[in-house]
Length: 275
Image 1 (tube, rainbow, N blue to C red):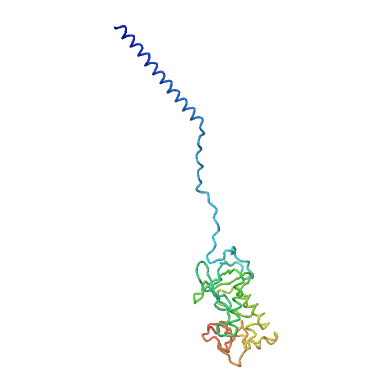
Image 2: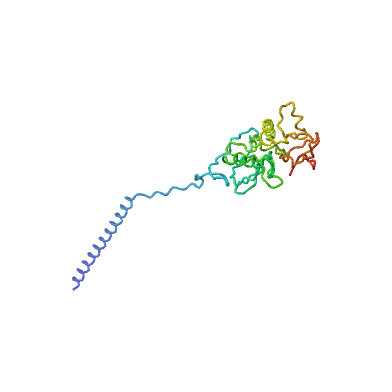
């Protein structure tokens, strides 16, 4: 009886040892298989870091109120305009011969031309000057530049104006439809204006064809027909005695060194027929 139990016990131990050995072999095989599979897979590369200092290209901004084609300031058509800073503007309305309304830098503004004056409504040559101004400012992109002052006493922007390649202020003087007025310190183009005005007056065009400002027939008789008290326009000496309602010119210079024989400058501020 004891011999059978010993034999049974020996067989059982042999079986258990065999099972354990098989399990160990299986575990080792699985581990080897996993290791082989891991080594055969490609290693993932980390994503490249984004450099926060790198700038993305951006489209250039279009100034408010400017035409999309207005990429750069104009070439200045006259030497007196060199060195100024120009801003693009969009025409909204023509008021008269020397005033327009524009949109500039996102705002609507009324603009008064620097250094020139055209006839007021109800006076001779008003319609002609207004139509000439309209033709000029509709020629192309508007560009505006200041001299020294930003605005006049009425709140209007004071500006030199280029339309296309035309210096609008000067062209009106050349056509005899505007006369020169000087308001220091905005006088950088006054000599250019005066030269053009003298030529228009000599040619007897526009304002200078008016019966109260006759065309001087020659240099020898100029001083007899144009009184020196009014150096920027041609007003004959009295008689007859004239007043502001008799002439088309407004806001012209009165040189008190020669008096004011027609009484155009009632407040003696050096400017005749201000209204």
